[in-house]
Structure formats: structure tokens, C-alpha cells
Length: 220
Length: 288
Image: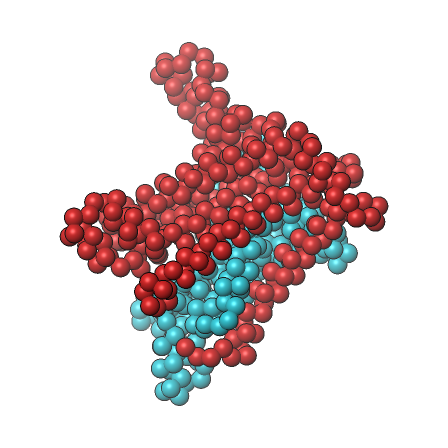
């Protein structure tokens, strides 16, 4: 327990947890917002140049993000996005959005477009059919997205360090220089925080599902 | 299928803009930084970088680590996936292979240090049992010149990712085909070669490119587990980019872009291969 005591006395740890949480949740929400419609379009529609879009959307994880961020660095300084949490959020989208699009692409493909057509032919509006049919079916995918993207966002050290410039303190930027200096028990407790944070986010998410997604109570 | 409507194009716009504005713009800016010297066009930095022994050593080191780790992750991941989808149908195992993903790479790296370094747990364990007589007889796995610690960390961390990518493909596989091969007297290897391989090959290649490029350009794990010479490429680049000497910056761009171009050419070769392959499959089946 000594490790926890030392750790919790460190004044920047709370600030770091707070900003990791804020940044992670924002990144997750933006991911969902971007990837659900895009995944649906790629899964349900065939159009010319589809392979091009699919290839393009995997580019951010194939091209080294260090190269991209070094290129963006000067421009982001000019735009005032460095040393600001919004800038960090933007660069965290790079390694996460491709995965989210893949997740929703395959889950829409599994569900198939016919349910929506049925609902629409029975007179439901497109948005209502999405809300009442697809959203409940997408819950497993949304759950894995929340988890995966939040962990990806937590794990970014270099991107956060370059764009955050030392002013945006997340637990990754705090943990990393810590490693070579401090006692083992402190680091071990610190490592556990990396597991606890995603779990709190998952809990919050389950709570939101209970409130917002229809037909959950009967099934659950 | 419905025709491609305007509203659907709109949905592709956000990730499109994101990719173009961040990746496209970032890479173009990086290229421009790497080929300009005092406002003049030059390829001097690329020449410098490839004449630099430190860079070449670090490139070889990074490439071999990335190749070996990717190979083992894919191989082990494939074996486990084949075993998983046959023997385990329940959801419990899904949780098990999610656990390694709970922690960031560098936390795993740190655990490796705790377990395998010469003052670590395993070292003191075998010392106390009496297998080795001095702690420094324990094999050097952490900060070793072959990158064994780095490779083990990546294989442990990337294998679950490989399983995650492959398992859905195995669940969608037509298992009647495997039975056909077996009834006709095929061995396990024939089942794999004729039924599974053509189906999973594209996913396997895509996954290996993702894993490979990730390992090649990662920073955190080699920082913890690597040696001071040769360094993994991203460590070297980060050093060139952020140390006080600004004259090294264009070199950092040139080095990182060379790695990017390497990954890009593998990807292009693979894509052209895949398109041919898809065409053959379409011809064979009469359907997509």
C-alpha cells in the first residue's frame, strides 16, 4: 500500500487522470460519431472506388504516426493547437479511427441492410429505424470501440508528448519518465491505474446504455 | 443494393477529411521539410541519412525486429485461432484475450523488465533454486543487442490482436468445405491449404502489414527495452527531432519518410497482388 500512498501524494497525478479521462472520452465520442455512419456506408453500399476509400481509411495506422505528427507540428503550433488538449485529441484520432471503422464495417455487414428496409417499408423513418433496430444490435461493437479506443488514447506517449508539449499531462506522459527513477511498488500501483481507468469508462458506458438504448431492460 | 446516394457520400466525408487533412498534409509537410535547405530544393538530407552508419545500423535492427516479431505473432495467433474456434464456443475466452489489451505497450514493457532483467524475478528465482550461481549469469534478455526482450513483448502484445482479426473470419468460414476435404481423404494440412488459406489470406496479410508497420515505427517499448546502440529507428528520429541541435531536424524527417516509403511500397505491392487475386476468385466462382 506504500506505493499507492506515495503515488496519490504526487500532485500531478490527479490532473493527469482528469485530463486522460477527458481526452480519452472525447476521442471515443468522436470515433463513434465518425465511424458509425462511415462503417454503415461501406458495408451497405457498393460504389465505384470503394476499395480506394477502404485503403485510404487504413492509411493512418500504416503510415508511421511519428512522421505525420512531425510534419503537423509546425502547423499546429501556428494554429495554437499544441500545448492544448484539443490538439492532443486530434492526433489521438489518427491511431484509433481506422480500427473503429473496421469494427463497424464488419458489424454492419453481419447485421445486414434488410432489417432497415423492412422498417422503412412499414413506414418508420430512417432515423427511428436506426435508433430502434441498429443501435441495440450495435451495442457489442460500441462496447469494444469504447474500450479499445480509450486504451489506445491512454497508451499514446510520443504523440501526446510532441503535441501536448509537456503542458498537457496525461498518465502516459507522467508514467513514462517515472519508470527509470522511482521504486517498483509505486510503478506497480501506477500500472494498475492504466487498467482501472478504462474500466470506469466502461461502467459509465453501461450506465448510459441502460438509459438511452431501447429494449435493453427486457433483454438484460 | 441501393444506388449510391448523396447522403451516403456525406457519411464518408469526415474520415476522408480526417485522413487527408492530418495524414496527407502531415506527410506533405514532412516531405517539404526534408527536401528544402535554405529555401532550395535538395536531396542532400536523404544522401546524408543513408551514408550515416548509425542510421543504417538502426534501420537494420528495426527491420529485423519488426520482421521477426510480426512473423511469430501471426504464426502463434493463427495456431491459437484455429484451436480456439474449434474447442471453445463460449464467450469467456473473448474476455481472456482482451486482457492483454487492457494495458498499454509500455506497461507490458515494464513488466518484462521486472520479470526478465538480471535483477528481476526470474533471475532471482533461478538463483535461489541454484541453477545459476551469480545473478549476472542470467541470460541478457532486457537491453540486449538482439532485441529479444522487445520481440517477446511485441509477440505477447500483438498475438491477441491477430486473434481478434482472424477469429471472425474463421467463424464465417464454410465448414462444410472442410468436411468435404476430410471425406475425400485430405489431411489436416490439406484442409488448411485448400479451404482455410484462400479465405483468411487477405486478412492475414492485412494484419501482418498493420503489425509490421506498428512495430517498425513504435517508440515506447524500444525506449524501455532497447540498447543504446543500435537504436530502434523511431528513438533515433525522436532524438534528432527534439535535441537542441536544429540542424538535425531535416535528417529526422528524411529518416522517418524513408521508413514510411518502405511500408508504403510493401502495401502497394500487396494491394496490386490482392486485386489480381480477387479477380481470379471472381472468375472461378462466377460471383464476387
